[in-house]
Amino acid sequence: MKTQLINTAMILGVLTMALSCSGKNETTPIPIPLPSTEQPVKQPAPHPEPIVTTNASNDPGFKLIEGADCLACHKIDSKLIGPSYQDVASKYTKADIKRLAQKIIEGGKGNWGDIPMTPHEGLSKDDAQQMVKYILSLKK
Image 1 (cartoon, rainbow, N blue to C red):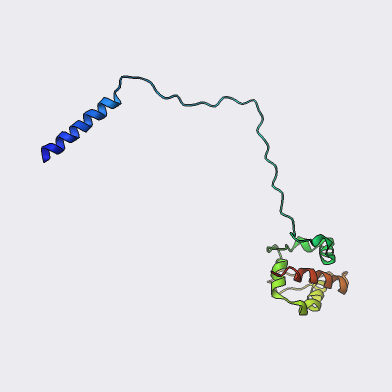
Image 2 (cartoon, helix red, strand yellow):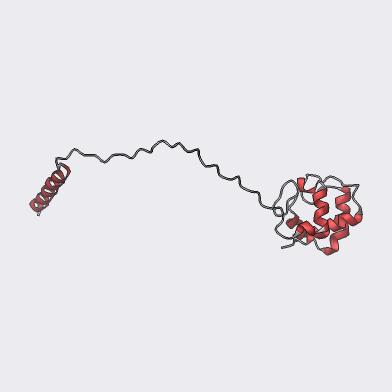
């Protein structure tokens, strides 16, 4: 059995040498890219997603939000400095409209962490309520 194993190993060794030494001294050339005279194609800049995917541009509350400084601290669907409007909508109901409108006018902190919301004292109660109604309409 031992001699049969040795004979098989020798045959495989001889075959390997015979196949690898075919006598040809050729190598496969490595392709080299030709220099290009074309300028690289500029990729278009990614467009940011719109702030709202609904028809918010016609909503009076959204127009008031756009005209104020609200979007500097809040986003529709993710936390920025303050909570997202969707998070606010999921926490409150229509019963909270007057209280939230007053909070927008007076400002404050504590409900969403230590960063205070600046007061918007020049805003009327009606306008602040329109803003809150729009925000609550974003409830998922």
